[in-house]
Amino acid sequence: MDYMTLKEASEKWGVTPRRVNYYCAAGRIPGAVKMATLWLIPKDAQKPVDGRTKQGRALKHE
Image 1 (cartoon, rainbow, N blue to C red):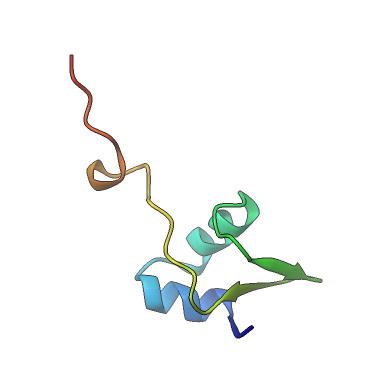
Image 2: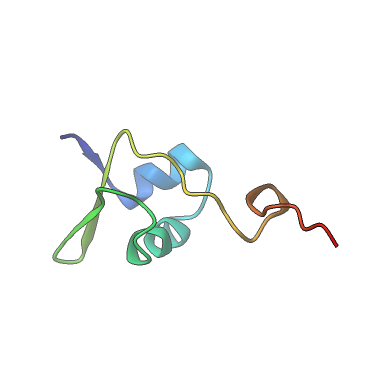
């Protein structure tokens, strides 16, 4: 399986490397593995939905 680094994933998904690190640490990227201090992310991994934005949240009906 081919892997990409935090920096490569951040450029691909348009977010910061720190945000990708958070996704990995929270287990939100299936197949991501940590080797010593380096996260390896599968090249075919999809960007997790960001719950902080309106696009990432389900609409609330009140």
